[in-house]
Image (cartoon, rainbow, N blue to C red; front, side, top):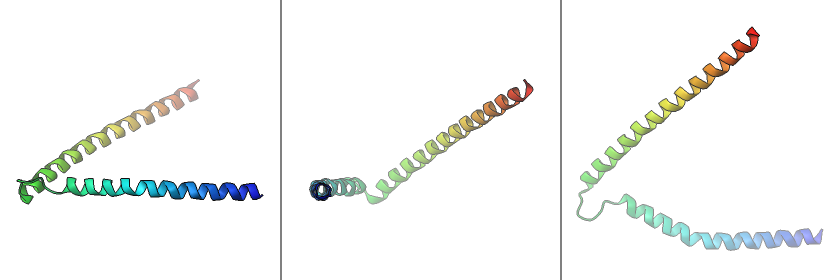
Length: 91
């Protein structure tokens, strides 16, 4: 039982060290994200917003296309299963 408690303490210390190591990486990640969201120097905020909105519209169109393809595949799969069931009942 005591070896189990020692193992648990070692695990907790290792997790604490890991958390301390990850904090600077998270801070750098947050800084990069804030910099990415800010308009680049020399570009007006309105132009930046227009570019971002256009990108979002493009992503929305692509997402709709992917959804349509997934729905088509699911319909094809359901049709195949239904055909297999009918063929199984016929034999």
